[in-house]
Image 1 (tube, one colour):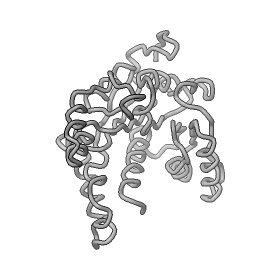
Image 2 (cartoon, helix red, strand yellow; image 1 turned 45 degrees about the vertical axis):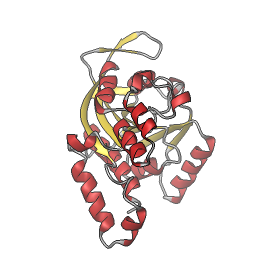
Image 3 (cartoon, rainbow, N blue to C red; image 1 turned 90 degrees about the vertical axis):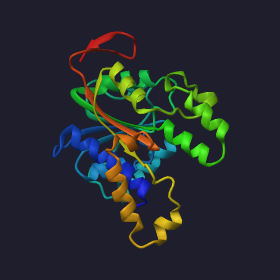
Image 4 (cartoon, rainbow, N blue to C red; image 1 turned 180 degrees about the vertical axis):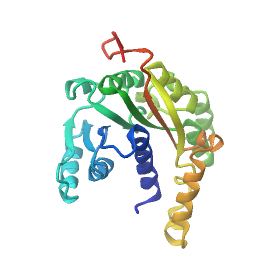
Length: 256
């Protein structure tokens, strides 16, 4: 088992796969999947995985990782991003889209979700992990940067300029409202890394049993609404809402 942070992020992928079709081989799109640490593990479990990422170097590493893992069928690697996704993959071709650590960086998260909706099948799911704003406030305050901590409290994700403010931060209500506004029904929202980013690695790596105990604590707290709001990462699994028409990336409405 790898570092606690890595395994908690992998667990969020596993939870999404279970929600999208436990026991079934799925067509999965990992948007911004980078070097494919999650994608290769999914492919090894029998899922058909496509990674779309804007970095040629990351995709080259993905291919090497697949070869080293001995995959009979490699992960499909596509050079692209959320903005040009329809140019690279067919509409309605995936059961699950993994969108982890992506919406913090794009200019328009709503546009990205609208595009994701077009490549999902009618029963499809999206798994979104974003950075939590409350955790950022706490981190800045603990570092003694009280001015930045106060400024983060008053910022909303919808008014965030990633060019001047850095990666976007969300609270739970904003993330769920964004998904709902773009044709998704949130199924579950959990916290990822409540304490994992705060506990010194010296404790986790040297104290007997500390690593497993921290992982167990994180899993226990992940479903607590009281602690989810304080998590470094917010994870929402949502499915397409077939009862509404969702705007496509070009601005037209399409019935799901």
